[in-house]
Length: 219
Ligand code: C5P
Image (cartoon, rainbow, N blue to C red; front, top):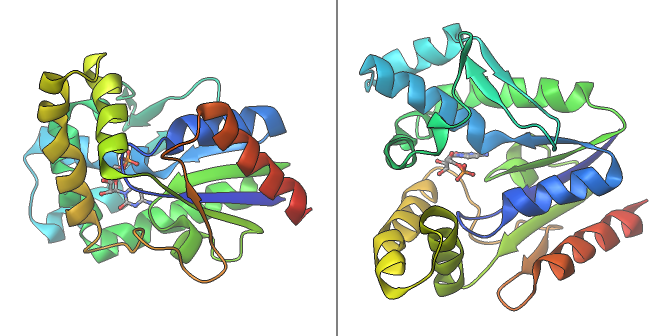
């Protein structure tokens, strides 16, 4: 079983790249950010903020996540939250969960179970996949891009355009979340043995092609 581990900040294009690589290789796909988001949605819906309560909630939650790159879905306690986890409210509050070390440990355990069960391979994306979740993965990549490029990409995704207004509305959301995430996970620089893929001046096909080449080289 082969694992392709991809980390990187928000708006760098991890999800679309990881999904496409999984499709082309016939691999499963795991969006670990969606797991943190689903738990954050639950915390928000219950008004839970205390780390002790967050941990208890994560331990008790029935979290189901699809690993099919063509049909993504995530549910908590039987409620489909696939759409809800992309809301600005969840993005702004996701660290209520991701900053709690014991809650991370729980989710990391589940991620490792999913990875171990995947055949013939799996592409996993997040912030700590190359360093903590799957440090032994044969392919480990840190995707990066200049701040202005990431903000423009996320603005297009959220607002459908990267005009000045959309960029202004997105900038703090992207760089602010990264700064907070960097306090918990180390994804701003590549760990030893991790390939840095700067996507600032590459198109989608070039990024996917580079990842596929790295997979081939590792075989
Ligand atoms: O990747 P995405 O932007 O959907 O991740 C949402 C949030 O989940 C991140 O901002 C971060 O707080 C958390 N996360 C994490 N570790 C991961 C994946 C995501 O802490 N492996």
